[in-house]
Length: 178
Image 1: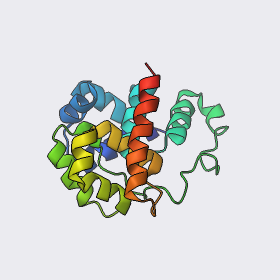
Image 2 (image 1 turned 45 degrees about the vertical axis):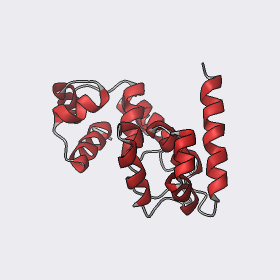
Image 3 (image 1 turned 180 degrees about the horizontal axis):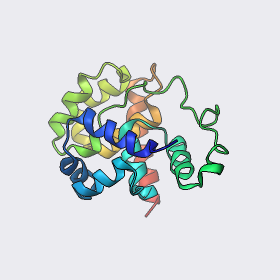
Image 4 (image 1 turned 90 degrees about the vertical axis):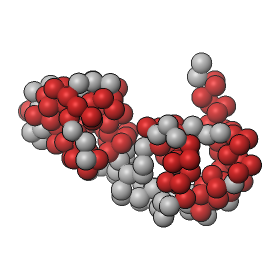
């Protein structure tokens, strides 16, 4: 359990083809900070780690436990079991590979195009996003698309209308957080 967070951060950065400066800018910190994270000299804050972990495809529960585990003294790290069925992501989830981080995209045309060309997404979600009326009426943000995929992406047989309802539901919950 040497530097698992650093290794995951380095893998994510390399997979995206980004320099340390570019990767850091994506999350609001410097290239030298990325270097320190990757080498294990410094551990990211939990909030920052959760953002990075989400883009790495690491389920939130597992990401929190990983973060806690690396913060513990070595003799106690084995107390946190990351192989437990309560930590593993459900098999029916979006897939082993992480979807595009739509929240990082500013161009709505690019978001729609990426969704249309993503074979791992449910047909109902793709149909909803492809529908011009839906798009004009709701103008979903990249963050809302990410939430749709995270929360409802495993519902392979869900109809387009259910994803319309889901976007309204997400907005109700987000509004109630303020």
